[in-house]
Amino acid sequence: MKFAEKLGIHYENKINEHLAFDDVALLPGKSDFEPNEADISVWITPEHLLAIPFISSPMDRVTESEMCIALAREGGLGVLHRNCPMQVEVDMAKKVKREEISGIIRDPYTVTPDTPISTVIRIMREKNISGLPVLDKSGDLVGIITNRDVVAANPDSPVSKEMTPKEKLVTTLEKDILENGKLNTEKVKQLLHLHRIEKLLVLDELLKLTGLITLKDLKRLEDSPHVSRDVEGRLMVGASISPFDHERAIRLDLVGVDILVIDIAHGMNVNAINSVEKISKDINAWIMYGNIATEEGAQEVITSDINKLASLRVGLGGGSICQTTQVTGVGVTTLSATALAADAVQEHDANISIVADGGIRASGDIAKAIGVGASAVMCGYLFAGTDEAPSEKVYIRGVPMKRYRGMASPSALRERYTVDRYTRGSKRIAEGVEGMVSYRGSVRTLVRDLASALKASYGYVGARTTKEMWEKARFSKRTMIGVREGLPHDVIPESQFQDMYDTF
Ligand code: XMP
Image (cartoon, rainbow, N blue to C red; front, side, top):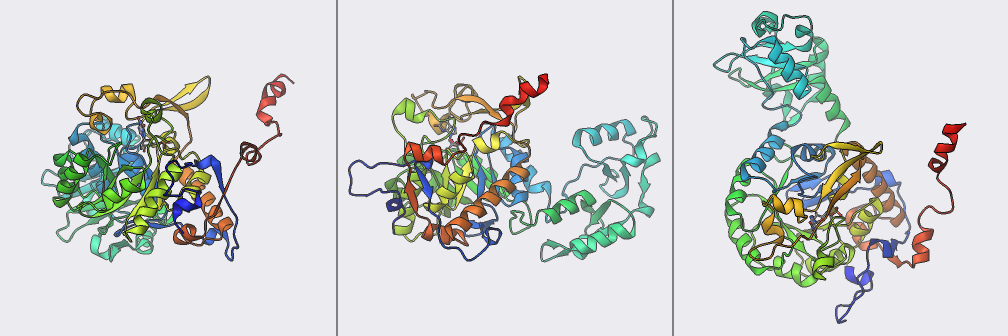
């Protein structure tokens, strides 16, 4: 069955009703497994498996290095925004790639033997770390200094006076703890336990420092079994580019970005497709192309000459901060656009994943998008309120919030780097808005909750895997009254009585 038919779309019609997330609900199906047995992992490219199908939008209030690191550690993917100079985006990508390899911290912050203790204390405080390897001028390891060594030390004395010196250091060779690119956590734990230490220094065969493993990171590794990694064990990262920015594409590719996300509002633009065809011949990364929102749009891209096309980013005008439909009259609901694009992929028997982008507000929307052929969802609004989103938490009447804005909002456009997503040449009209979203805590808690809810959806539908979701998901169309019935109703939230309690 065609995905669009599930939503009552018939290709021969001149006008079709394009249903949105709230217009439909999934129907329950026979299930012979428990929800926690559902497998929600997906191949987002032929080489990249995501344990959880959540991708963050390339937006400047959503995704910088911190978001990418947090999402990759949970099995998802962050896509760096490009509303910044090229070098800044390149540095953000480098930061993700250098963060760790298979649990080993690469490029740890280091100091020299003559660094004053006051500087050590400042670095520890600023970077929230509790120990620094000490390297001499030629880069050889000569000691380690930890917070225990500095608490009562004279701030003016040099590190060499307080550090644990080379002779007493506990180190390990990288080859002894890595097996086929995977960290042998048991071996590391034994070493930490044996020497009653919290930090293990990792060396190469020339005895140069290659990294650091901390007890804290080890615990986190054990608690996050589904990290998104590249073949070298580094964290996976996506980065966005304008379809016309050849140089930025090449620079990001050199850093080892896994997926280059082509970031243009109207992906059916032939100049953009032609440009990306050229760029794709010069890079190694896989490409996610978008946005497109119709079957013809998807076909145009699928049959183009874009090398290593892995994914289509689908949606137009559905985003929480979008104004495109209001301003231009053009838009396709994300649910319907997803079904249309998925049909095109199916028709061409293409190995291309669909990413539903825009308007995802809750786990139910994610399940519905997957039910009409998406492999994953891209979210701005959902992630903008988390700790890892790059904006300050602010309190409005005591309620914690974070700032969020469309990349075609007036203030984002003023920063000019996104100009060619929404405006090239003469056109320069805001197609986005800016505002606040509720603070949501850490990405980790959020995506774990979303993943549990998504597994519950698979359980109700009776789909063990995403492929089964595509086959088995069926929908009912809801009336306004039905929508109301599907939400909590008639119960008065206790919070409304909070003031009364306070006066008792
Ligand atoms: P959500 O609903 O997750 O949507 O906040 C995020 C997606 O919205 C798109 N986007 C925009 N669309 N004007 C638009 O019409 C804008 O200024 C804008 N900024 C982002 C983009 O696809 C993103 O992933």
